[in-house]
Image (cartoon, rainbow, N blue to C red; front, side, top):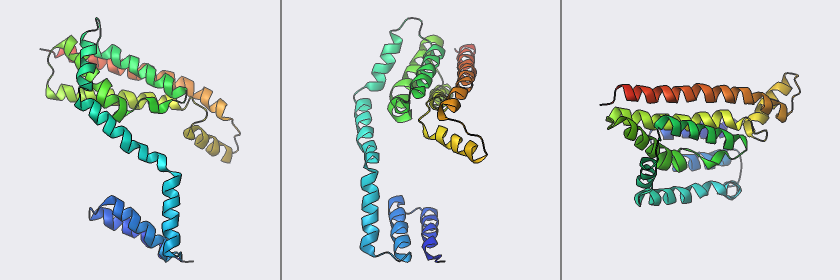
Length: 223
């Protein structure tokens, strides 16, 4: 057995430990692995090109992030805050509980990318939650602002994690099905999705209670 291709792993470990450019480290490790496995250099480059072409949708990220950055640059967060400030009865607790429900429902329908930290939490949800907290409790300290932002991010995580398993065509459901099948339990993805509903409901109730309790704690220490 040829163990030389495993040197590619060592290249990755050493390169990251020495803080070299990650892209160069990964490409260098891939080329070294291919050459040590006996492939022609042109074949290695061809394999890299095919992998990039097959996964070219990943490059869409580099289009989305500048768009979000431009929107923030021209006042997206300020407009989000203004919307909340103009709403009567808006509180941080109500806002985040509503977003939690929205995130879980859309994830359960397979629309898991409709939210997320870069495209929803940072430019919209966190500023709106912060504005709602300030509207209700007055000026917040720097530590309290950070906690509000962290709660907004946690709400997105909980909503996605416990909502997506209700959608039977998600990779996690297929993984669970494979594990059960290897143990002798033949279950369909739909059966697993149905059993994910009680967990999602419990997650909503528990995290919703945490959000409302956090909102009350902010009020108890407001100045």
